[in-house]
Length: 235
View 1 (cartoon, rainbow, N blue to C red):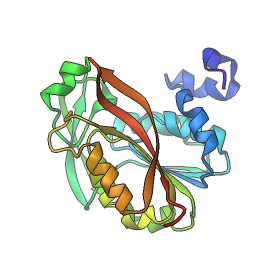
View 2 (cartoon, rainbow, N blue to C red):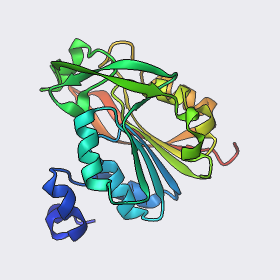
View 3 (spheres, rainbow, N blue to C red):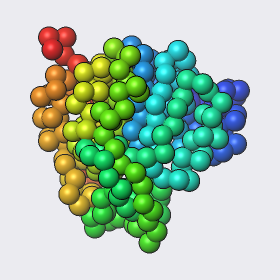
View 4 (cartoon, rainbow, N blue to C red):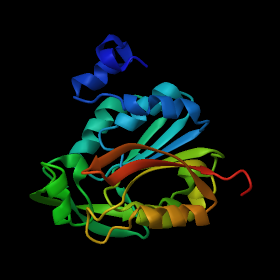
């Protein structure tokens, strides 16, 4: 995918009008994965879904995004694609209503309070002062979303809430071939699980770490990265 000239691709024009470009840095990874369904937890404006549906147009998508503004943009981009369904909610371990703490950089908004470290390391991530109440539910509560898949890709980008999403998806994970998760090696959100705990959980569910990418390294220290896990052939 020629990342230097997105605007030359007609399928990008409508999303670009909404200020959204596909996640081109994940195109090569997506091409290597043989998935029949994308479960996009923390879908934001639909960047990842946009790239995934371009690479795998026959795969269905269930996307989950609790931020009302981001969800509206997602619908504007993907609303005419019958294979893509957006659920305006957050995934977690249990059913609840929770407060979404909105960051000045909206993709850093979280159900967890930001630790001081977050804004120290990444500018413009401090809380905006705004919150909204959102629905939270486990992925396992929606078997119609995933029960017909045999090799789903679960993508998780939920700002510190990764382990809660995974704990609420034990049954759905049995239908997943891959988990692609952003995870932190230091505390950026209060109460979050760090990468080692996320890794241990996925290993207990039959997944093995395949690769690490998009690393944020500051002063020689790994802060966070995207991790691809694949179901073990021996599981």
